[in-house]
Length: 118
Length: 118
DNA sequence: CAGTATCCACTATGATACTG
DNA sequence: CAGTATCATAGTGGATACTG
Image 1 (cartoon, rainbow over the protein chains, first blue to last red):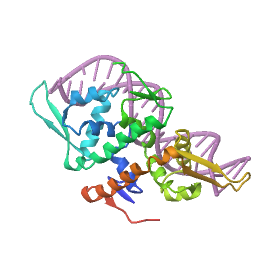
Image 2: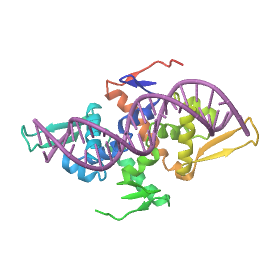
Image 3: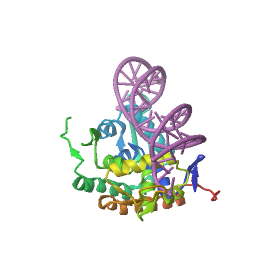
């Protein structure tokens, strides 16, 4: 049994899910394998709202998985996000997650492929 | 862009998280690498409530990841859960998730190890 | 540009008690 | 034994408008 900030995680698996679970975290992390600006990230994470992206980025930063760097002092701002060394240890896992998604596509006939509706 | 039952998933990664995301799914799945009865599973997934376990199992069954078999017609019931062939394709990923949890334990000093309080 | 503020809906999770 | 029913709460996600 483990705990972080008084929340309990019964096993290694639940510990990992604390970091990458939820609807968006893994998606954000895989896009941040390459350092990226906020606006680029938003375009790539289709459907995510600014509010949600912002909240998730903050959590990931607090969890020590990524680093936020501000390059300008006045608007327009330039902010970049990138994985920390700790975050980088997730890269193989993130690739494995993406690969299984591709695999699932072949095996599960309930998954439909939609056209890019722009 | 993919969809399952009219819900949208923008990439492979989000597709995978649809199947194993959430607080408990990955934990349940990794315990079901070996076929197991409901009561065994409940003991092993510490802290989970019966209601939540029940709901999650139903979702996993609907998603085609596991199979439920009832062995008795009257109470006391004997029910076993096991991975389907599709579910078994997740096994390497589940192991990878558990391994990263162990790794994180070494790298992240915010993670505390609690005694088994029983 | 990179967010925050506000308000709201929906989903997930939980506690407890009960049943075929 | 293996759940379901009921009620309650917390967390996540979303729409829209606004700001340093």
